[in-house]
Length: 282
Image (cartoon, rainbow, N blue to C red; front, side, top):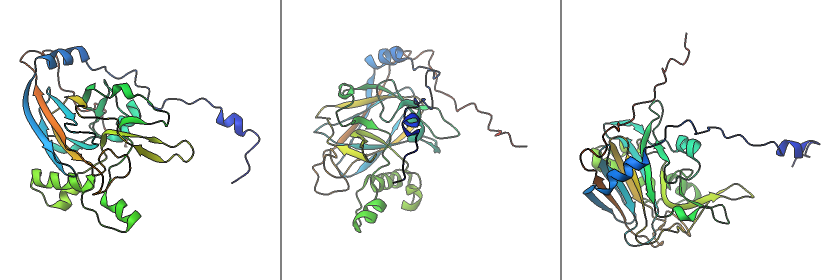
């Protein structure tokens, strides 16, 4: 450990600056969304069995809800623009714009060069949780996803039901692609229902048992046409371990609702980011 300089405390005392102030972001019309949701009708429902993943489609202007029908269960969510798989969820920019964990009113943003809202958080029955004494919060965009490569690195064993592999198989089946092509599409996730944070001493990513219970849900408004892929994590509530066949796991459920005609008059799906893409190249 090098000796601290004489002005060490002064350096530490410098006030932080928010990297991406989000006051300039266009606020979603939540009142209109909620009014449209009141009269919406169910158009689809899928059940994701423990330690598996499934794909689903949501039309722009519809709603989709991820719920725990039987008990606490963490899910790993990937999102794509339904007709352009190059446009996909960008967890890093979502984190930079909204924070390490999403809440009602926050949006899920797509990758560069598109950088537009893909979905808006409409309602979350775990909004009450806030921040616990360990610094834990729910629904993070900081973790990557459990994967077989890290599992093998740390244990020397192959395990095939990680969220990365689950998502790979689901996309391969849905898109009729070989596994190696589908795997290239899998990206960093929204960890639905997962309670996570960073330790204060070492700054390590931690998880603790999800506070979700039977019936809890998070609901989104689809800003663009979406292909979703959702994995029911093999860690169950992630209170002890992930990438495991011993953890108690439950299914996840996705329900899709379409609003009544006319309820979204005046709303439009967001366009791609308007940056010129010139990059000042001569």
